[in-house]
Every structure is written in structure tokens, then in C-alpha cells.
Image (cartoon, rainbow over all chains, first blue to last red; front, side, top):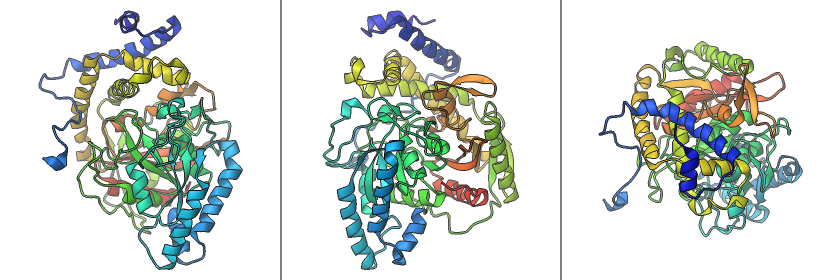
Length: 59
Length: 457
């Protein structure tokens, strides 16, 4: 399990214990769903983000 | 009255735009103290725009069915010289120097902007229980939420304050208020409508679309706002189609409507399940081929969307993240969650998104469109944080978003239309989803179903 408390401390994020507990529960749940899926992702799979080296009208 | 009905009356000279605008302002004045659907009302500029529209109509101009029609926009759309708060303390006095692209296009079509709608703070939530500008109330029951984040837009249309209102949708924020308020809410394909001038929440998930009283009105608005805009990096150059579903159509012959066997009807209230099954039966009676389809893992797609949303939203508001006093409790918590997402998790979520988009293409080999419930429940009460759905307690936000968020991740066009009411008289909505850039098909199917169902906003 990820230690969200330490990550928060290291990043200078100041949250109370109950807040951290709520956040950790959500993030752990997301991790549980996504971690197994990532085992099937091929290295050449690019992320689905939009980036253009120049605006389209200049191409 | 719908936009198209009002447009006909304007051209028949039975009414004039000034009268429509005065009636809109009168209803806002009468109902806004109770519903809180507007943050800003623009009486003076609306009256002037109506006067010009009437002059144009008198000259026989017919540039768009929107000419002279009172509309509103969610308060995340920049309006030149008019306060644009995003429902946030951060922007409480922000006055933009330009209009959002959609505001420009609506003005070019002759629509009359009467005001700016209240919303969930920063469009980051689904209750529209805004800590800075007050809660928006559902016109069907003021003790209930209107949904969100475009809650003021949904409430304003449902209450007859305006004929249509613009919303933004990052994880269901147009379709949820449409479902809870009993109006039509259209989220077009990602890239179909320019996001320029709309305060981002999550730039790769944000969509712009209308809330209206009928499907044909949604088509009218989409026709006015769709199209390429070089100021939005995600804007598509694909040609804009004719979105008019036609005046009368009573057949879905030849349409294959997909009913997901693994998504939608599990974990919804009995009233929602019954209303959706009724709509599906009706679609079959209208000639549609009803086909069972299996979708890719929608729980995984929702989780992908939540990681992307958390990371992008916290990136957008980076400079304010330590300013706890500027945010409501729920939005502050979400922004802090986003700070804890690792860069690799965000990039991997976008990689998984790419895979799921490809996986989803197979669905369209077996169906022309999909039908699901829009929300698993009717509108929850204001202040409720959990609801009982299918015999178990569920977080209100997660319950409200779980049937709609995935289609933001996939960028697909989707529409919520009213399909009935529950025992308490609260509206219920169904969602129809189509392949990318197939808005014309989506609107035609929705219009036929709307006519047959007989539930209008």
C-alpha cells in the first residue's frame, strides 16, 4: 500500500489525520482498480494527450 | 414553450423578442430567490439585444432559430465585461476581457444572453450546493439538489426562466442536472465544441453543451456552437453536420440500439429500472432492433477518468492549492487528492484511456447507439452525502457520476432525456450514447424517443 501520509508530508501538504484517512481510502481504491490493468499495457502505448509542436494552421 | 416554438411565433409576429426577454426576466425575478439558479442577471444588455433582434426580425432576417431567444450560460463561460465567477471565491470579482467562443457563436446566432447560472464551485462536484453563492434548488422539489455541476443551468431551463442554457461536462455535469431536473442535456463529442474561454476543470475531459427543453432545441443550439476553433487545441476540423432531426419522425427502423448487459441497469432504483426498460420496449415498438452488447470494463474506465480528473484539476488550480479558506470543504479535499497523484499514475491513466478507446470501438460493430439510465436515482436531498441505491448506501457523487463519467473518458457524444417520474414526482433520465462525431444520429434517435415518450422539459 502507498504511504499517502509520507507523500503528503514530503510534498508539504498539510492535512489533518481524518482528512488524510479519507483521501488515502479513495486513492487506494483507485490504485486497486488500475494497478492490475497496467500489467497489460505494452511499452509502446502512448498516452492519449493532445500536444502539437505548432498550432495546426502553421503546419 | 421550446426554442423552435418561440422561433415560429417570432416569425409569425405573434410575439416579439422584447416580450420573451421581459417574461424571462420576470420569471427570474420571481423564482430566483427560491431556486438560486442565477449568479448574475444581465437585464440591460438583454433588453438591448432583444430590441436589436426585433428590428432584425422586422426586416425579415432569419439568420438562426436562436434569433431573439433568451438563453443563459453557466458562470464558467467568459463574458466580456460581465463578472464570471466560476462559483468560486477565487474569481468572485473576475471580469473577463473577452467572450468564450460559445458566447461569441450564440451572439452571432442572435440569441439573447440574460444571465450567468450558478453552479457547483469550480464545476467540481455534482450537488451545486455552492458555499460561496448559495445552494441551487431543484424546481421539482426545492429540498432536492438540481444535480451539477451545471445545476443552475438545469434549474433555469426546467423552471422556464430561459429557453436553453449552456453547461460544461467533465464527468457528467450536463447530463446529471438534465436527469435530475427533467430536461434535455447534450454532451457532444470531445473537440466538437470549442472550450476557448471556459474555465477548465480537467482539460482532456471537459466538454461543452446545451441544456434545453427538447431534443430538437438541443440540435438548434449545437448547430450554432459546433465547429473548429484554432484557439482550442483539442478542437476538431471535421465538418459540422446538419443536426436537425426533422419535424416529425416516428420510426427507428434500421437502428440497432445496444443495451449493455454489463453496465447500466445493475444498482439502479426500481423506478429508474422500470422507466428505462419501458423506454427500451418503446424503442423496439418504434422499429429499433434491440441488441444486447457487452461493454469494456466501465468501472475501470471510470477509475481512469477519476485519476485524470484529480490530477488535471489540481494542476489547473496549482497556485491556489494551499489556500484552504478559498474553497468549500469538498472541493478542497478533491484538490488535495489530486496533489497526491504521481506523474506516472496520470500518464498511465492516459495510456489506459487510449487502450480503452480502441477497445470500445468494437462495441459499434454491433450497435448504432447505446441506451442506459443517465443516473441510477432521482435527485437526492440537499445536504445528503449518501443515498441508498439497490439496497446499499452509496456516496452521492459517485452514484450520480458512475453511469456518465465513462463517456467523458471516451469522448463520446451522449444525451440525457427525460423518460418518466418516480413515485415522488421527481424526473428520471435515460442516456443515449453514439459513436464519435455521430451527433446527428444521436439527436435523431433521441428526438423519436422523446416524441414517443411524451416527457418534455
